[in-house]
Amino acid sequence: MNFVAGRLVSTDGCGVAFEAHGIELMIPVRSSIRSGLAAVRDGLLGIRPEDLQLEAGRSGLPRHDLAGVVEVVENMGAESYVHVGTDVGAVVCRADSHRRYDVRNTVAVSVMTEKALFFDLSDDSRLC
Image (tube, rainbow, N blue to C red; front, side, top):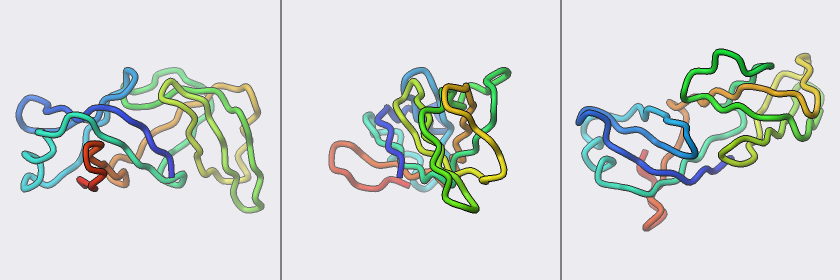
């Protein structure tokens, strides 16, 4: 599991976003818990390696994507675990082993926010 510390902020009164080191992720939440999320300030994003999509290069990145440099590639047979150094810290992505990612190459990492977990840093409770 990858963890990133950041801030949960209300967006225009109708949504919640997670911000960390210049990235912003819109959080897909039910309206019944949105008001509780808006009150939280410091949060933690948890995302599994299989819920990060990896693409070679970094041109044309949407604001919520991460750009980084491949640090390590662990070939595990049918899949590979690619360690990427980003502005929010190192993240591990699961990738198809048929795709080649070379150490020191730049990549884009997209976060599947519908799969992300969010935690309140004040009491470690899971928010959504």
